[in-house]
Image (cartoon, rainbow, N blue to C red; front, side, top):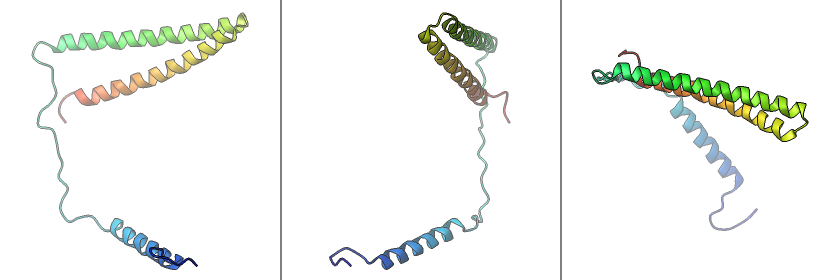
Length: 127
């Protein structure tokens, strides 16, 4: 057993840890507060300025289809690179094609997530 200033025996440290854990469980296990929860809603609905909605819809549609076209072109090019690399025994082309497929998949996932986020921000009216 060490003697010295500032060191506590193992039993005291273990007892302190148990007491601290029980106190934390008591606090975390306490029932909900008696006050009713307040629901916060937005008072203003997001909408385009007058005359801009048709233009905003056109630009959004063009961007969506442009990104979809680029994803499709990237997938075809990557798969073609893998095929060419296998046919002509070119390992670099196959490797870059495989990386391209992985990037296309990640971009497609990111595309859907971004569209979901934008849809939740702009919404389709107030709820």
